[in-house]
Image 1 (tube, one colour):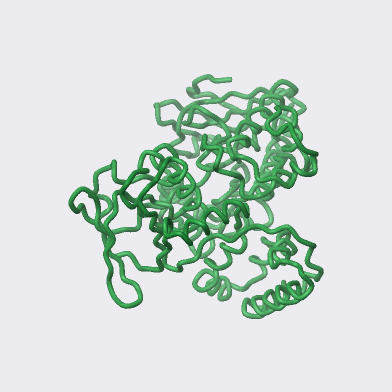
Image 2 (cartoon, helix red, strand yellow):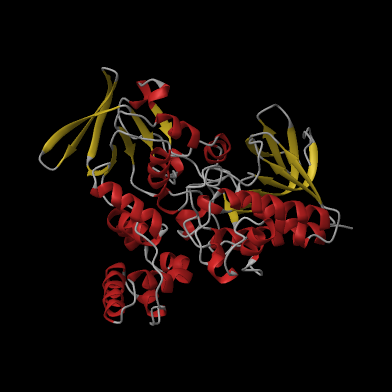
Amino acid sequence: MTDPANHDLVDLAIIGGGAAGVMVAMQALRHARAPLRVCLFEAASTLGEGIAYATPAPQHLLNVPAGRMSALPEQPADFVAYLRETGAYPQGPETDLAQRFVSRFHYAAYLRQRLAEAVDASAAQLQVVQDAVLSLRRDDRGIACIGLQEGGRASARQVVLACGNNVRPMPVPGAEALAPERLAEAWDYEGVRLLAGEQATGIIGAGLSMVDSVVMLFAAGQQGAVHVFSRHGVMPLPHAHGAPAEFDPQPLLAMSLRGRMRALRQHARDAAARGVPWQSVMERIRPLGQALWQSLDEADQRRFLRHVVRYWDVHRHRIDSAVHAQLQSAIDDGRLQLHRVRLQGVVEHGDGLRLTASCQGGSRHWNLGALVNATGVENRADGLRNPLLRQLLAEGMAAPGPHGLGVDSEPDGDRLRGVDGIAHPDIAVLGSLRIGTLWESLAVPELRQQAEQAARHAVRELEAAMP
């Protein structure tokens, strides 16, 4: 399915071959009734992985049960069916497998398998170009023209931006001067594994990528303590099985942010009185994630980002209870230490590093062997390091999203908006780039819906324009 593109006109160009891009390609192939040319641009040699699903480690688990990970909205049990088909988890009833947190590497393989099946069954053709897209501009005819890293070019009638997640830079003064072997990105899974040893290791950030790094270090034989540094000093909380929370979440939409927080706390107390875990309250409001964000006024959205977001994240983005228990056990015996600090700097010191941070009581120093950047996904438009996104923003074809998060797009659609506020009729955007508009735009339930919407729109427009 691989072929170089050079001044070629394709019907649909999908930029990005991680989970979101593969879902778009899959849906376009499934919906096409004409011999459309679909082109998927991805620099990596393996599709479907991105930074989330590239890990080979069986210890890295999905953060939601397998039964909620189907890539196909109309077939909610499809991922579980794939696991059965391939014999990945041959024992136990299917209902148990649907509730299981399975190894994450299965998901990329699942996406590739379903994409291959879609290729075989489709009237459309898929071309995969292993190259990075550096630019997207209009040619003299107004058609989207794509510039590639290796010098090739292609034009497209419809474009979907599925660029995936951008990694935040290490937020520690002095880190840029350190030897490369002392640093690793949390999503550089092999790089993190190689840091394991007798010296203490520092992890910057306390979110989901921190969990991956801790699990990897301990699996690789880490003997020194692992120190986790964050501004809030809180880490992801566990999933829990329990009865559903019984309340109507719709009234939340008419409340202010303060009113919503009070109401949710009361719902959690009411649930606890009935023996229902607070996690069930979060599950009850899960389908309203985007509506809850969009129904807040601009001032309350700012308050949320300033005061609430970190606490929301640890309650909303939870982890398998067994993984949480592993982390808690490491905290209890001192192997894992969580510090609430503001980082001041890091320097080479002896045969390692010295990290300085301010905390309650003044400044403090830690001697470390290495540092892991686990600060997560970069959502600020001015911090995006993807060359294509930087070009689009610099030239006005894209504009920062609300509050400077991601890029601007139509709230009720998926069309990319330019700096003039006008939507591009032939360019869709999905995934984390829509966080400012939708907030909930990272997880598979949102990605699969966005992928189907973008693919359906593109196929409909393309086939309607055919003679």
